[in-house]
Structures are given as C-alpha cells and as structure tokens.
Image 1 (tube, rainbow, N blue to C red):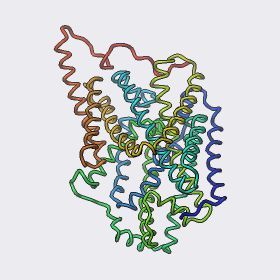
Image 2: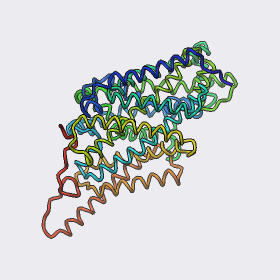
Image 3: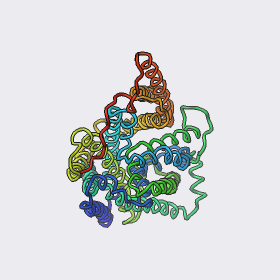
Image 4: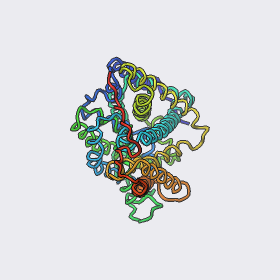
Length: 503
C-alpha cells in the first residue's frame, strides 16, 4: 500500500494552486478589450509564448502517458520528435503569415473569408465540441492520479482541478494563461529531473545497467522499418506526426492562439522555433524516464500498472517535498492545457458566434464581460462533464481518437482554402464529411495504426473536396445561360461583416 503525502507536500501543492489563482487575479484588471483578453494585447515576446506552448501541449496525459508507454512498450514513438522542427517552416509560411496579414482572432474566420460563414460555423462548432470532450478527459485522467496519491475522493479532485483553472483563466484572460504556463513549465520540468535523479541515484549513476535491464525487457527498440500500416513503424511515426504537428500548430485554435499573442510576426516565428527546441528537450527525458521506471521496478521485482507508475514512484520512493513537487507537476501539466483550452473555446464562441451573429456592434467593455462569463461557463461545463466520464466508460479513448479524426480533416479544409483556388464551400464541406467518414471507418473497422488517421483524413478531404469543387464549377457553368462572377465565399455575394467591430 502506498504512503500518503506529508503535511509539507500538501503545503507545496496548496501554495502552487494559490499562486495560480493569484496570477490570474493580478491580470484581471488589465483587459480593456477582446484583443487584451484573448491575445494579451498582442504585446508578448517570443520566450514566454514558447514556454506557454510547451506547457499547453504537454497535458498530464502526456506527462504520465509517455513514460507509461515506454514502460509498457518501447521507444518507437521517439523519432516523432524530429517532425516538429521539420514542420515549423511550413507552419510559418502557410498559416502564421496568413493569420497575421488578415488580423484574425480565430483560425475559423479565414474559412468565412475564403468560403462561407456556414463552413466557418461548422468547423468552429466541431472544434468547441471536441475540445470540450478533451478537456473533460484530461481533467478526469489527472484527477484519478491525484485521488490515488492524496486520498481525496475523485469528484473532489476534479472540482479542485477544474475550479482553480477556471478561476484564473476567466479572471486574467490569455496574459494570465501564458504567465501561469511559464510557472507551470518550471514546476513540471523540475519534477521530471527530480524523478530522473532519484532513479540514477538508485542505480548509483550506472546508466549502462538501466539500459541493460530495459533492453532485456524489449523496451529499447527504437526503429521498426516494416512497411505495414497496422504497426507502429518508423514511416508511420514520421509521416503521422508531421501531419499531426501541421494540424496542431496550424489550425488548432488552442496552440495558434498562443503564438498570435506575439507583438509581431518575427516574435511569432521565434516562439515556434524555440518551442520546437524546448519541447523536444523536455520530451526526450520523459521517454528515457520510462526506461528508468522499467529498470527500477524490474530490479525491485515489483509489478505495477503503467498508468500508476508516476503516482506510485512519487509516494513510495521520493522524499518529502519532492513528492509534493511531482503532484504539483501533475496539476501543472493538466491546468496549463485546460486553461489554454478554455480560452480557445471561449474565443471561438464569442468571435465566431456571439460577436459575429448575436451582438455584432456592442461596446468592447461588453465583449470583455461576456468573454469572462463564457470562459466561466465552459470551465464549469468541462468540470461537470469530467464528473461523468467514469460512467461513460471509454470516453477518454473516444475523445482522443475523435480529435485525431478531426485534426487531419480540418487541416485538409484549410489547405484547400489556402492552396486550391478552385475549391468551393460546398465541395470543401463534402470533402470534410467524406474525410471524417473515411477515418471513422478505418478507426472502427480496421487495424490500421492511429498514426495514419491524420494523413488519411487530410488527403481524403483534399482529394474529395477538390474533385467536388471541379464538378460543381463545371455544372454551374453549364447551367448558367449568362456569364456570372463567383464570389469569394463560394456561395453568396453578400458582403462579410467585419469580424471585430470597434466601439
């Protein structure tokens, strides 16, 4: 049976939570308009943005899941880390320049300017729904670990996680999110190296022994050069993660909203390059921490469930103080992702729907109040949904797979708009529907690896969308008896209202 946390450990966790709320309160009075609330006034420099992106991208699912994956399987996902630096030039050229030139708050505004409001609303709605499910899954997964370590009841752990994150996010907006992310980055980075140091000390610094034990257990396998689509292969990892990174950094509102806070496009570029470097630097120790855990427990002769490795190790083998630091790190990894998620779906809700259709000409002070209220409501919704995740069984797996389905399809929609001049709104929408259907079929009825979901979704959407657009254009020309100009929206000639009305 695991030991419980000491009073000192609880003090560290409580101090961390109070610090997050304090940061949010400190920034609460600095939001004069929606640009301040959602984009930190576009005055942020590249380094805090980079650290914030790393923190937002590293949820507790990754913080605990990567070592657990290596503990159970091997290192074959490790080569995927090289794909982000390879994707950054494409992200900057395709997406960052476009978003800055158009002065956008959400990626989905581009879809209205290029296609139609219907496509913008559809994409934004799907993003909100799927991100909400992900937020609930992340809160639930983290609360399980916190509950096991602290002895708190699961609903109480969920309410503490969700309530604290919701409080500082709704109060301080994006500036609070970024600076708390920087603090959280420091917390979980320190925890990673504290656990690694403890394992090295247990083996008296003998890295060869750690590697030998892991190798004997088959955990050091790095490359699978098979051409199979059903296994985790080198080609699947490289291609799959390249598409996933393009989608995550190019069209996912959660991450792109972070780099849109930069004071100019040059700082945005620097933040992406710094994130690629720092993120890889943090992820590599997580992979090798998995090897260390396997070797440590193999030497101890203990059998442990993979998902409980970090909680068990923190309580059983770390000294007082470091145990609390690891618990704070688990909180930090999730709260950074959840706060960024709440901010992004709040932005999508207010900009793509409320401000666009319901109150297009309200004063900015009204929009800031509305943003705080919407952020609070979405935070409460995610927290309440997390309370019921256990009753829905496999919702964690379902939400993560659904996000994999959606990211590739959404990437395909944007690439059609950016790179295919003949693409129309109807053709693109049909491509997206067929793309999601194709990936859903593959995920539900075949054994093809999840690594291929995003590439298949993207390419299917693009091919079907392009073909349908060509057919639509030819049919329109055949039916029209007189020449007509097809408007930029692809559907109507109505002017598009400015998405960000001023006072």
